Image 1: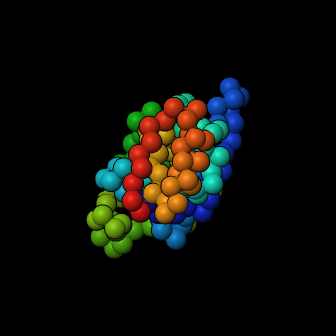
Image 2 (image 1 turned 60 degrees about the horizontal axis):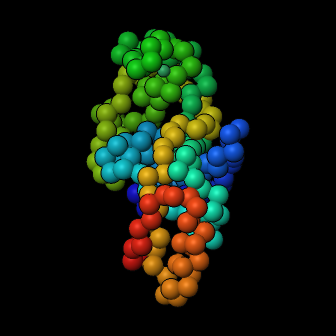
Length: 175
Ligand SMILES: [Zn+2]
């Protein structure tokens, strides 16, 4: 999933750990579930610019993924969905991420298509137009970083130097 994002920002939490905030672009992933489906099938890989402040990263750093349509704000209208389920026990109509399985636009056969194939959605709330808001829908650890080999080896050397304190595994790869 080497898709460029709208932009990666950092933010420090209350314990001083720097995290990456990454907005998933709607041009590549119109719906949050499109991204999640691809992530479950293929894993997650996000591009960050070579001049990124790598020295701010630590082994505790995470990537916080944001999408413009990650949360349904008029969730109460989805209380009529009989097949609603949530692993933490929310009921249909409550403010819950899983409302997306009912609110996400679908083809006539009730599925959506992503580059890796189709995925099914659950029942719709008849006559309801879903309203969405931007939200952090997934937080993942930074398992490793892949540095793209630069024609000038000094560039990679500088990046590696900045990464030394992050103690995150680094792989050097050709573009
Ligand atoms: Zn829930």
